[in-house]
Each structure stands twice: as structure tokens, then as C-alpha cells.
Length: 111
Image (cartoon, rainbow, N blue to C red; front, side, top):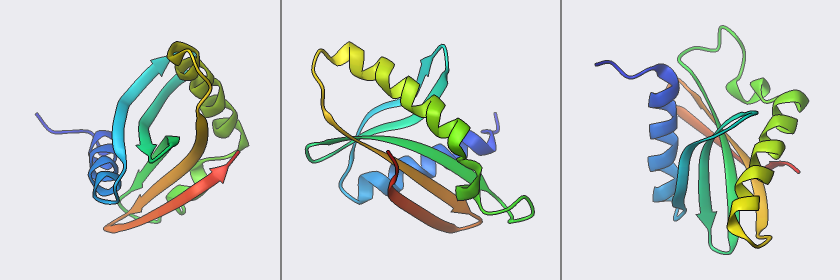
């Protein structure tokens, strides 16, 4: 079965981030608000990663797709994940855009 572009992008992102030293905590974490693509550990920081994959720039840069509305939803989903932990970790919100074969990783893209 052929993987969707979204799944392919998330897999590329996960492998890339692991190569950068991050540890995968969860993938496709579902909540009533939607799903968080990747939750990673970067040393002492819990990182919520939104992945956007585009095979062309026809619809713009993938990083531009994470607008304020999407950011608000990601923060709500992150709160659900943190509530399960029983403690308040240091967190960061990253966006990883993939355009064709180029990877753009924005650490701390929003707060």
C-alpha cells in the first residue's frame, strides 16, 4: 500500500530529527482538537513538531501553512499531552517543512 504524502513527510521528519539527536516520544498523537505529528525529546526539552510536506512550491512554502489558527490548535493538543505526564516539562514548538528534497527546521517557531 502506498503511503500518503503526509505520512511520508512525517517519516522523513522523524528520521531527520532523530539524526539530529532528538528522541521520538510519540507520533500522530490524537486529541479532540486534531493530531500532533511528532512529539520529541531534545535533551531536557519536550518538542511538539508540526510537519508540512510539499512536493512543489505551487501552493507556497510549507512553513507558511502553520498560521495562528493552526498554532492555537497545536498548543491545545500539547496541553492534553502534558496533562497525561503528571508534571510540567519545558516545551518548545517547532515546525519542520519539507519542500521537494529540502528540509527546513524552525526551532521555537512559536510560543
